[in-house]
Length: 84
Image (cartoon, one colour):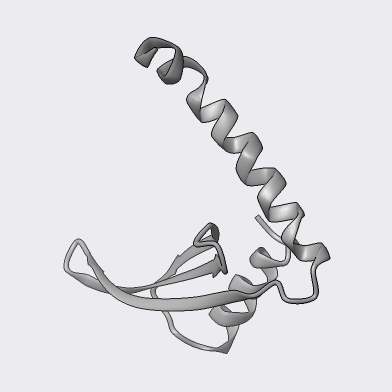
């Protein structure tokens, strides 16, 4: 069983997550939350921004050196599917 899970588990998981992300948006009570964390990468402070839906599924992650309006707008643009 573990062999099959290692082969196909990620495919099944991706399909289930894709359906869960599409489905709740049809409901008027669908919510998402924004989380911001300071992290050190190679001794430098970076900002990790993460958007999570109400079921705990990560919608988007963005790491930047700056914490300003331009970075926030870029993250929101990526979240809405505008930029990758």
